[in-house]
Image (tube, rainbow, N blue to C red; front, side, top):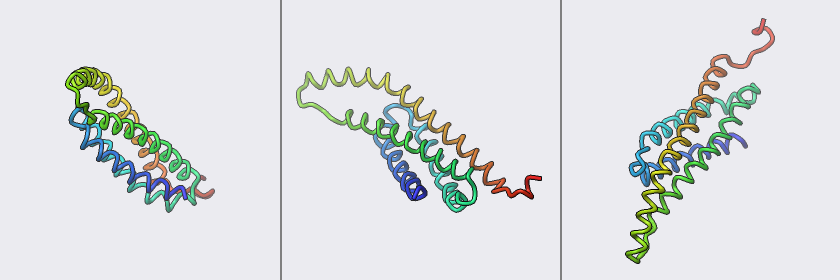
Length: 150
C-alpha cells in the first residue's frame, strides 16, 4: 500500500513541477531550481522501484521509504503553494485602477516570494538528496544476516 502511495506521489509531484516550471519558473527566476528538483524526483522514482522490492527484507529500506514519503508530501505542499501563487498572478481585474494596484503589490509580493520559494525548494531538494544517499548506502550493503556481520 505504501509503495502505491509513493509511486502515485512521485508522478503527482512530477506533474506539479512541470506546472510550476510552465507557469512561474521564468517569472521568479527559479527555473533552474525547479529543473534540478524535477531531475532529483525522477531519479528517486527509479530508486523507489528497487526499494519496493527490498523493503520487506530490510527495516532500513522500509524506514527509507517512509522518509521519502514524508519529503514527497512536503514537496507537494511547496509546489502547490507555488502553483497557487501563479494562479493568483493570472487573475486580472477589469478596472484599470485595480490593475495598477495589483501590479504594484504583485511585484512587491514577488520580490518577497521569490527568495522564500527558492529557499523552500532548495531545502526540500537537499532533503531528497540526503535520502537518496542513504538509499545508495543501504542498497549497496543489502540486508545483512548474522554471518555477514562477523
